[in-house]
Image: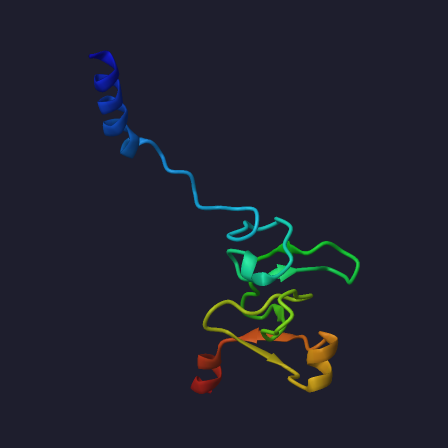
Length: 114
């Protein structure tokens, strides 16, 4: 008699318990956590300070901050811009290959108003 009542109580209380946030070792990583490519980060940017440093999840660049256009490598020296902003940078093949095509985040609507 006690066991069925205990199971019923647990089933009724389970939805009231706080759910653990969805996070894993490979995807959905928080800011500051080690990463191998941007797809792993909640922010969408896996950033490294230099060629020898470990890459970590970082926030995307805000307006007027340095940025890199989105690339295929998945790791950035400068994060891409936040949604709605454009990275005004040199988009040459050489800059893309050497990962040195840095620019500044701008709001395309600001230039439309001028």
